[in-house]
Image (cartoon, rainbow, N blue to C red; front, side, top):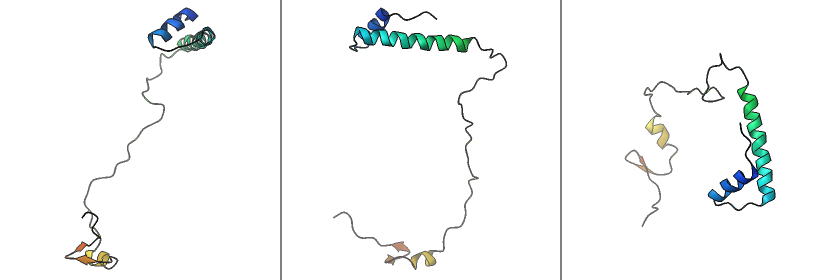
Length: 96
């Protein structure tokens, strides 16, 4: 890959409306060169028999079968409720 020059970094920063100094532009140009060198190194690898991946981790959904199961016994539940009426829990009024 071609090296990105300091002038190109300044132009990109200008287009992005970023203010950078000459020293920062030089620093970023050096960093971009190191990145492109690393990319060049990776492109030299033989990936002929390597399957493409979309994620580095194996992602498996853990799902259970959707089936109904009996709930708790209503009378047993109401034994632990402070106030109830007609099979429903009574709570304090929160809106007036």
